[in-house]
Image 1 (cartoon, chains in turn purple, green):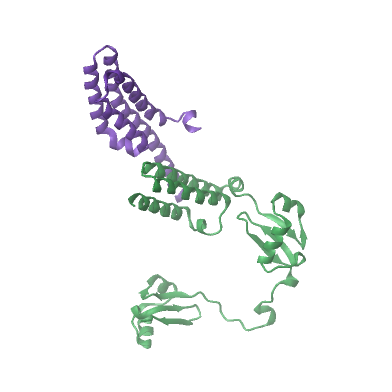
Image 2 (cartoon, one colour; image 1 turned 180 degrees about the vertical axis):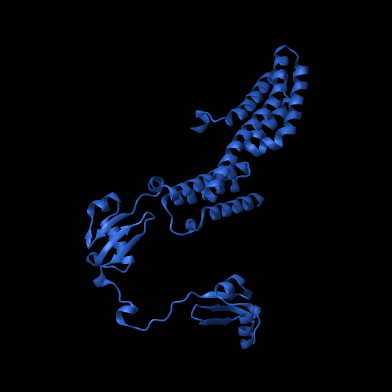
Length: 122
Length: 219
């Protein structure tokens, strides 16, 4: 019976870990996505300077959360998002909008990958 | 290196928790688990782009499932049958059960090979042959073909004895000393008689009949 309890405890821990991991990735990705979304709105409103400022804030937020995210999500994705955020500061104005949208989409996908949906399972 | 060491340690722990049977003859479920663990560990070991957790979490999941199912299989017959199957009686009183053979998907050639591995060259000599759930064939010969034992030929019987290693590779094993019904005073006397210390002894073992086996350490 001892091993049954160990197995059940381990299974419980893993389930809790799954929920925590999903929550952690969602919250942290959202923390970075929020200023990016504002940046995209500012760009669409014609204020490119404000968009770059907010993108820089998003990059700082990303740096703060990158370590934890890299321990939960593949490094290929996190490296890609990190690089995209860095390049936003230097992006020419005509590309700024699409890059903001692309980076935002990548962040939203990070959170979506953690959910137990049919798409992710199969 | 750190990732490899961490995953290696985790695998050792997982196999230890799953029990000694994992390293002996394996039931189908145990075989699957062993293969899975090896593959789950190898990918994050080699690919630094994957988080360590992507190897640890599946290994722990497999371990948890194996522990739970192993206990359920032990307690509940339907679960045991579902996971491991049932043994099949392939030969009875020298006759091969062809239906059981077909149901077990064992060919005649395979059956004969397994019998030969048990030094049986004629099915007619077999009282029963059972294909166990781990794939091993257990054979009982008909009494006319069983080898003679000491009791059959009236040979004098000596008490069978389990040997207890008292000193192994220079180290005294106190639990074995107690189990053999001996004490340190006996050990000191025995070592003094041979003019050695414990650390000079490669092997000192004693059986239940009091017979000693002594091997000195080579210098």
